[in-house]
Image (cartoon, rainbow, N blue to C red; front, side, top):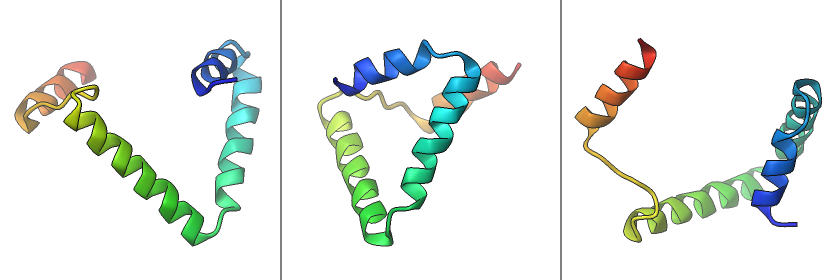
Length: 74
């Protein structure tokens, strides 16, 4: 099963089941040692950087991002 399929299935769960799943997933991360966590963060940073390079992740000027965030708060 791919991650997108897992996400879709998890989102179909009722709120209590989703909360239970979230707690278990977070607990599994808390059990990781510092080196494992650092590796995860490095992998995430690489993926985000590649996303910016390939334009699959959007980027915008900070003033535009702040403006969008402020309009969502209203």
